[in-house]
Length: 451
Ligand SMILES: Cc1cc2nc3c(=O)[nH]c(=O)nc-3n(C[C@H](O)[C@H](O)[C@H](O)COP(=O)(O)OP(=O)(O)OC[C@H]3O[C@@H](n4cnc5c(N)ncnc54)[C@H](O)[C@@H]3O)c2cc1C
Image 1 (cartoon, rainbow, N blue to C red):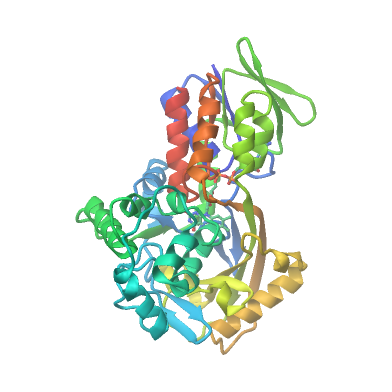
Image 2 (cartoon, rainbow, N blue to C red):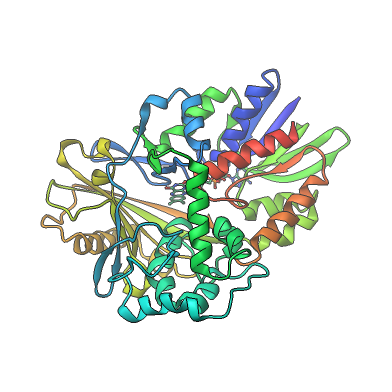
């Protein structure tokens, strides 16, 4: 039996690994268009140390990522952050991100002074005077929250957090897809504040007495996992190999590669972003094409910087919402956040640029963009020694899928069109979670379905 995985990002490599674990006698081939495995997982050497330029932290309150790291024998490389207290940069200055929100959605008006103006806090408290909430179907996060809690909650709290996770905009992102826990409670509660409280409490209950770190990383970088996965999986990983067309045959599938070679497969998993997945499905599951076209991507760039040892503001970094008019949308002070990245006192920082629908800044050339980001970061962190020792710029064109309003319906349509074709599967960041654990979960779900 030959299982072909198209796309050698985290999802595809995990699926290949999982298949080999459960079917050690099968042939597993991973086709990866790029010259290296890993997709959005990547690392660079920055001032003599490995440094992530894709994901830099994984959610530790769900098991998938930590389990995979341990299964790969890297459990002793897991590192907990020293601090995760971030601040929000606003036109009036920086304010610590209030504790206890649900992706920025507050549970009450308490603790919001400073990050919201007095009028903004009063607007949150006034939700109690609004008619009872009714949420019948999916809605944009921004639309519901502006109506119920006012613009400031969206512009100053929710937007910076969603900007960090999706590089997206609260006014376009789906509430059902990006905040499923809150969405479920909104259908039962009469106010957003009550629903956010219920979602927060449900999360706490499901964690039980686990008071461990919310996020973790691995010392050699999350970008080290693709090579380990590719080697440990025992699959044949063919780099620089683009799949161009998929065709059904009486025995299974033919996968046509760029250059003309055709590879026969008994089962195929497409672990590619929505665009290439739609092109590959056109001939075998045409009903999936239209819904996939409704999943656009945001492009961004990450600049990694090393500065000489110097005093820094407290905390793990800054969230920088569009209301500030600044170039960067966030700054992670990695040397403060992660103990293993502070060796030698060097200050290691990363910052990202680019949001969905706003990629003008990305048209600058590498040198110009790097210099502009370094200047913005130096000002935001008030660096006394702003001359970098080292910098790296990594561009992520079509880096993060956008879960726009109606996303769950699109995913259901894609899944149902694909399920009608025996031996075919899709998985990855485009569907039910962009984070590392969600991609691992989706890979495992797809393999269980196909097997
Ligand atoms: C800058 C950035 C920071 C992030 N930070 C975090 C974080 O801190 N924590 C977190 O949990 N998540 C984070 N994420 C999200 C997470 O990294 C990604 O969602 C996840 O890695 C996506 O994995 P994937 O395998 O589904 O897709 P991808 O990584 O996109 O892999 C798909 C692969 O398919 C290949 N491909 C495409 N077309 C073809 C074809 N026709 N034939 C063969 N191969 C093809 C591509 O080259 C690519 O390698 C971040 C993402 C980005 C971009």
